[in-house]
Length: 153
Image (cartoon, rainbow, N blue to C red; front, side, top):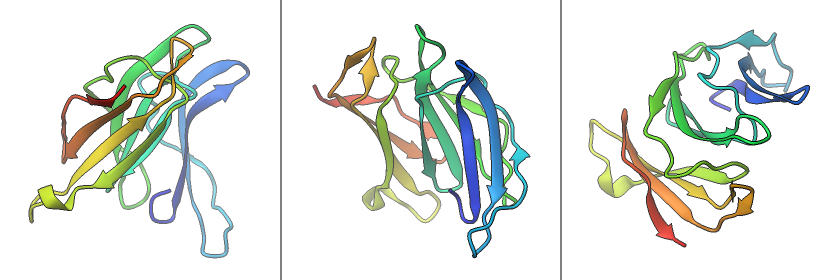
């Protein structure tokens, strides 16, 4: 969710990974408007994770099919009307992951008047169908995305 907009990003339909993205405006009474299509993802994925970083959506990893897992990271900017910009490809995860948690957290100590800095943490999940307990993080400042670093193994 971003402001009053709700997004459905990728997923699985009829055993096929999806790249389509839909969004709608949610009214104050909880009703929704019509669903509009947004720019599709460059790759169809399911079991991925999405985090919101200010006015950006970031799609991380996921499964492409039953045997192939993605390590790609994509970012799109949210317009004032809820529409999304074309997706940018960011540096990849250090390994392909699916079914993991991710969170974006502000780093006020690194913020300046011109930039807000956030960290994106990727926690656990599956790699080659095995459970992982690593935590990866990247600093995110505007359109700069630093490579993930392993914090815990």
